[in-house]
Length: 247
Length: 247
DNA sequence: GGGATTATGCTCACATTTGAGGAATTCTTC
DNA sequence: GAAGAATTCCTCAAATGTGAGCATAATCCC
Image (cartoon, rainbow over all chains, first blue to last red; front, side, top):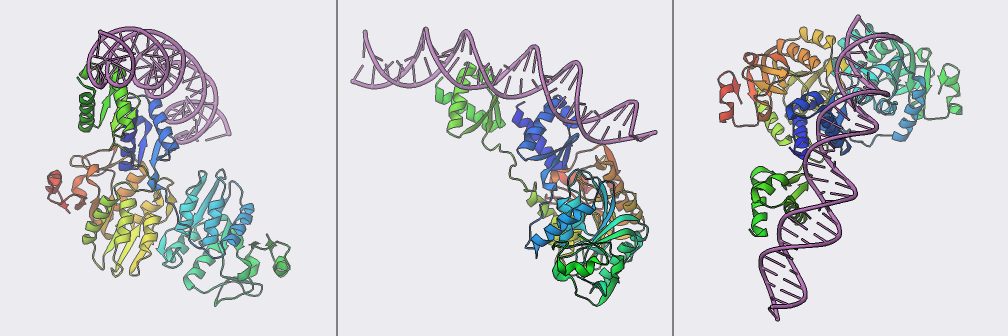
């Protein structure tokens, strides 16, 4: 049997079942596992499959997320980068939704070893790309506009949780009112998230500071860290720096 | 024997078998392998065959190359379209993961009014685009490779659920063994999903029929509908049609 | 016929593929 | 987190395939 035939067979099997085991293929094709491994390595080099321990996976299972035109993307990436400094191996982290969080998820180094809980399927999928991250997605009703899970079930699950750090984006943050939001569902979720975390980091572009919305989520004193796209020493952040750690 | 005759014979053999071995041809045509190799080189230069180590392949033998290209996408879309006929307004539906399900989610008409439960964040996000669909995403550990939530928590949530229809893809389906799979986690989840549904539809491209994997998920009698890319009257489906409704 | 062209087979040095043994790595499980 | 199992990587050796050069034979053309 020609090498190419064998590889075509492998591709076919992967397309069919989304994955293959080297050991299975070795039996099916009647060649040594080494040979299969060499085939898999070749196919992986050509980008036709994804090699994993023990076999290979279909490439189409990886989901390429289209880079949309996200508002203030650079600023958000900068925030995400700074927020990384709050995370270290071994931590259990609760993370919200939103584009900033997706950026953060993307920037997480592959060797970081953490457990993440999230209410955002998008963030979850992004985190799942990392080898050493465990991702738990909370279940509930998926809210159409925000793409996060909401509802009493989520609140319920959160009440059983206890995490080291909660990372939240926000629509508005001010000295007087603290975190505010305009969506009742979201407010409920955020409150529950904050409640089960030892510390809270708010990630927000500077523009959103010193603005208020209809509903209060939490007062400023609940916030441990504020991560913005400004220098930590920026005068615009001085008032906040009196109450919490600005990064 | 003339060179042209020989080459014509080679082409013929390749069209017949999609491949040839230099050693075989050398015997069949009673010439040295060198001659065969020279022939193959010529034919390859003219683009009539693809030369590989040890022989040659048919030109039509090209790998399913370009990435992001979901295997058998058209077939899957067709399946998804047919499966739509099982869904009507007011139903509560439990839906699995996989590319076929994503296709189905995409094809759901915007005015359909249903409640969906799913274990796949990708399917959930796709469904969330529809105005009149309520989407509940079950919570649990996100499995890296399959992009579905797994674990005891999911099983637990499923045990509280009662839905009209369960839509599942499968890796293998056969008359004798029913639904089989190779991943223990996935088997557990599928079992739980089947258990809480009044009826079960299996969506699968015909290729996956009559194959078996290591672990049994459910016997064939649990399956109410089989949706494939073949005509419902196709003889290959006849055996299945005796046990369930083929669509 | 004789020279040129082409096809074929042979030898030989070299390249590719494969399997096997053993070390190194990764995963599992307690 | 340490032992043990499974998997992978590395290297070597054997088998097999390849291309180049050369000799020989067949064919063609004048």
